[in-house]
Image 1 (cartoon, rainbow, N blue to C red):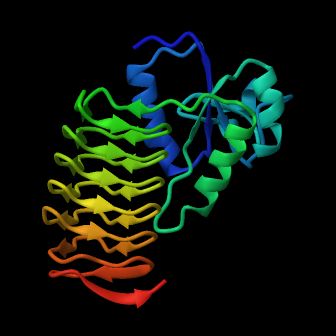
Image 2: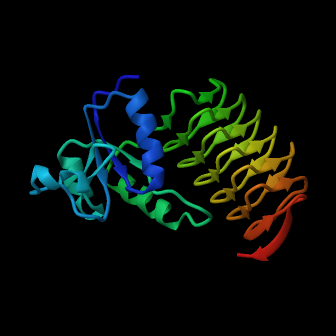
Image 3: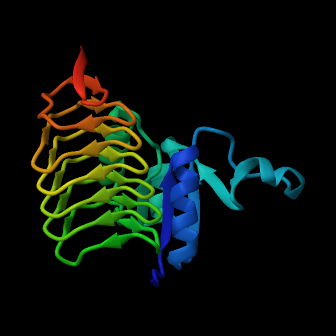
Length: 225
């Protein structure tokens, strides 16, 4: 894939490493920069430059520098702050980036498979060997992480994180801002509510309401959120 553009990755933690690896192996941006709260490379000497890079990519500023960085030609941006049940920071960054006019692409690992009959929003990450099948709809800034499967005709809401190794069977609905823990299996036709957290390794065979934490085999609602 060829992109003669400059892109910012917003957030320099673990999720950034996953996204950056996919970006470097599959996309050809003119320049990549990382935005994070740690010190930047600006004005630093080469001898300490490694402290201000991630996988060789420089940290070029903080959230406060986004407007200037946009003016400097970074027209694309991608949210690389991860989430485990609380998407507040991701939402705030998304709204901030949109307010400055950045284009927010989808980043799909070269080993990921997205059906041409799936409908995807913006800012979506599809990790290594993840699958999104025909007829599914994926909301803005969703994370479809490593080796997870979204089967046919599913609806995955905005800011949902489907963690590694999860299997979401056909016609499942997952509400906005929910988290599907690693290795979860969700039976076909199930509905998961808004802002709900499903614990790792759960087997979901009944609908789960909004604003709860649920886990187990079979998955049960345990706590109100």
